[in-house]
Structure formats: C-alpha cells, structure tokens
Image (cartoon, rainbow, N blue to C red; front, side, top):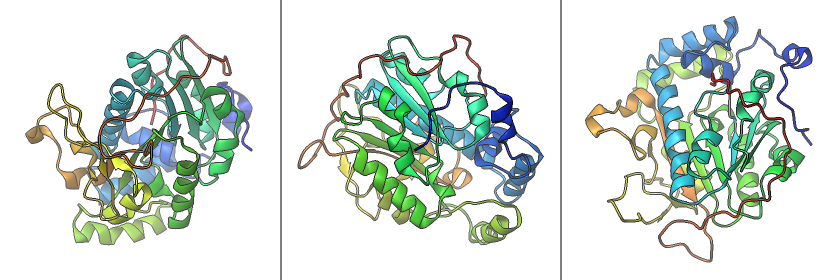
Length: 329
C-alpha cells in the first residue's frame, strides 16, 4: 500500500531522484519548455525528437486534450471527482483548476511515481476550499496500491462516478502491465464514471519513422510502446464514447458504444477542438489517439450524458498552499 505523500520539498525526496536515468515526466517537462529536467532527460528527449521532430507539438496537443476533456466532464457531464494517474510535473492549469472553475466542490487525486513530482506537489494541492486535492506517490503498474491508498479514499468516493485520467501514460507500460492496470481500475469505477485516455501510435506516421522506434528504445532507454487503433480501443471496449465532434448548440451528442475496431477513437487534436480544422496540426505530427469513454450507468446506455457525481463530504487530508507554483510536465 502506497503512503500518501505531503507536498514537501524535502532533502529525502530530492535524494530519491535518479538524475542519471531519463523519466517520462521530466522529459515531457523538457519538451513543454519547463525547467525540471536533467541531462539524461534532455538527451533522451532530443533523441526522440530526432526520430519524431514534432514531439513537442505532440506534447502540447496531449496537454490541451486533457484540458478540454476535463472541462467537458466537469462542465457538461457533471463529474465532481477525478483520479489523474501519471500527472507529471505541475503545469497550470492543472486538473483541479479546470474542474473547480466549473464546480468548486470538485475533488481530485493526483498519482505519479516520480519523486520529482512530489517536490512540486504543493502546486497540485491548492484546492478551492469547497473541494479537495491529494497527491499519492504510486505506480500505475500496481493499480491495487493506488486503489488501496488512504489518500484516495479520504478524498474521493469510488462508489460514486469518477473521471479517471490516463493521459499519455499507458504507452510506457508493456502489454500485460497496461491491460491489467486498466482492467483493475475500470473494475473499481462506479457506473456513470468516465475514462479519459490518450495513447501514442504509429498508425499515423511513415513506415520509415515507425521502423526507427525499436532502435530508439534500445539505445536511449526509452520505454515506449505505441499501439494501434484496435489495441488502444481494447482498453475501453464495452464503454461509450463521447462524440469527439462538438454538438450543435442546445443539443446533447449521443454516447456511442465502443468496439475493438475503434472507429470512435480520433487524433487528440480532433477531440472537440477549440480551433477550426484548417488551424489544427496534422494527425501524423501528433500521432496520438484520444477518447473520452463513459461507463454504463445501467444495463444499457444508448445515448445521453452520464449522471453527475455525488461529492464527498469535505475532509482536509492534505497540506494546501495558497501560492500557486506553475510548471508541469
């Protein structure tokens, strides 16, 4: 069972950071222009950029997909609880800031396995007093540790709908790890919950680029497992996809059952974009699928939005700091 970690930049926490090995959170921070990375992260990031030159654009688009998805869940689907796994180094607006803009009583648990995220967790704990945030140091490869953590249970009620965020994280797990993690987390979610998922793919890139990825993984300690549309759809098969196209004003788009062929999956840039199509980057420059999938709230779920979550009674379970610290990856 992972212990809940308070947001303290302690020498012990800093000492746990292995600066000689690249880490996805710090590499992501480097691509986004942050300052919380080391030589190994920059070298790994540059090696990936040499194969996939648009990786910085892909990182940005993933971030913006997360923001739009959270805004949808809090603003339209009525979700009031979020479990953000693989949160990375804070970068405003964070999940709780977006959600609490719509509903101040939203409650968010952040999870990551990189000690450097712990040193910045204070930025993740600046909750609106009506809501709550918590930070749990745990690994997605051990979903039971996440689900059993007291920080999770003190902050959100898993018997009520939750927005589970798995954004740009599953492609760092092998097939068995990813399948088991999603299955266990899905099984713990109440009816009416949602899963927000994005995942890297080679479906959009050239054959030449795809062929260079195995050597990149071997030579640069890059643990990255791109997956096909069908493989990514398998994580959310049996759920109901939120229409990626914005509905007409005054209407509610139906939720469409997801099958393993995955036609409901789109590039993250095309999930409810806030720009016109001609202003969007090319799918091949982002190479990442995105989907927002609803859990059935009954025997069948033919259409419509999921019910609102019931907020948990307020409990002060973490330290909070009124001074916001931007800079996440």
